[in-house]
Image (cartoon, rainbow, N blue to C red):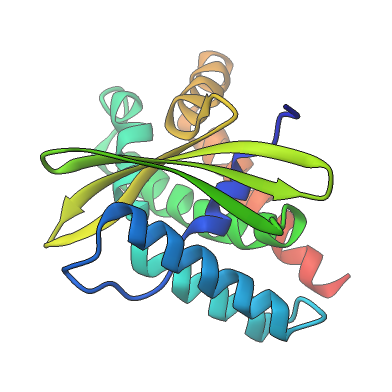
Length: 196
């Protein structure tokens, strides 16, 4: 299988939940809503991106993804530096996920099932795009009586672990302020794509 950027997983995120949805139903419903948006739009417009973001945001706990990524680094930072890193990183997660959705569009999905263990669940899927297939695993937790995505794995690459490794490598040589600058520059890079 071809390796893919973890951003494709965001394709599978989605819409409003009812408390009765299983983790598998959350992912299936989300996928379908994203696919429906693509089917009704030929070009990726700002309106389309906003609609996709609303779907993604309703089932993704970006706060948890961020905190689980940065918590170990925050021990060596001031409280203000940690809050700023959390804010900027969550913004990067949101902006980059919308941009990556457009780049890594799946055409269809295969659902391999769900494994529920109390308040945690794993939904295994395969995304198909042209001649490629991608293993996409979603880690969900029951938060406020709704299943929310708190991490995802693309072809064996765990999103939280991957970001932790990147941040660790940067912070060995650079300051927290320099890491923030890198993240802010990446956000701007994604935003500049809108005007090209």
